[in-house]
Length: 87
Image 1 (tube, rainbow, N blue to C red):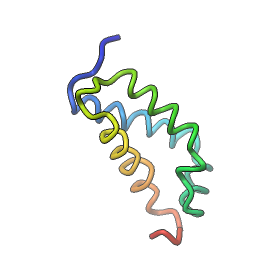
Image 2 (image 1 turned 30 degrees about the vertical axis):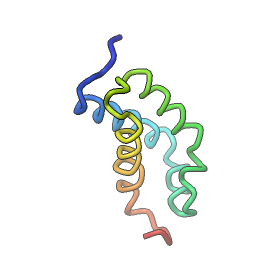
Image 3 (image 1 turned 135 degrees about the horizontal axis):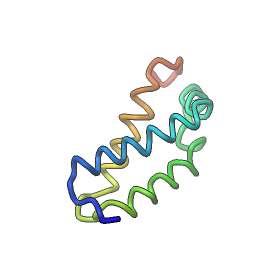
Image 4 (image 1 turned 180 degrees about the vertical axis):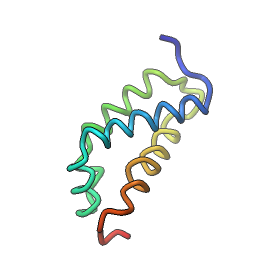
């Protein structure tokens, strides 16, 4: 498998990885949003996703930033309908 060096493809991969994290862990996402500890609750899943992402994306693309933005877009923004004191 070749390394992704296209920023749009890297963003798509990050969103796909995080969509899978959300899809397979809906209770953790809901609990993490409600209790304002989503990064603690999903620590292992987010790190596993991050490592997979890094293994597929060129370091020239600033993968930290791409992955972190996708975390907010996929996990946080999409959870806006969940009642929480953080909103």
